[in-house]
Amino acid sequence: MAEMTLTIGGRQYQIHCRDGEEAQLDHLAAIVDAKARQARQATPGLTEVRQLLFAALFLADELAEVKREAAGRQRTLDLPSGDDDAATAVEGLAKRLEKLAERLAPASTAP
Image (cartoon, rainbow, N blue to C red; front, top):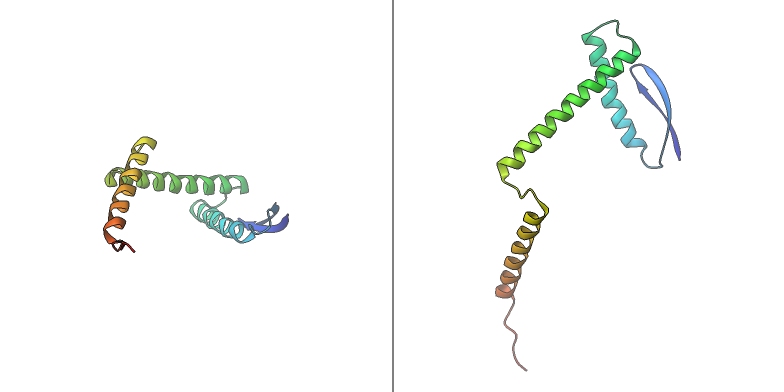
């Protein structure tokens, strides 16, 4: 288990994580820190707790927007929505690929 220090909102936090996760946590901490700085600049005088609260709200808003966009794209692409529809689509594709492979395969010659 790795131990590392993250700096968010000008304050350092000691955390433990699985070995190999350090770079990802540094990246995530940088995102949270940027949002905390954005909150501090938008509303000077925030307490540390409120600064982190607003950072979390900013991130939650961005996540909600990404989810809305993804849902809109799925509807636009008319992707199968259920497991049965997806399975049917995959089976149809597999059959088409098998037929194509048969047509492309060289005819076997009898010895």
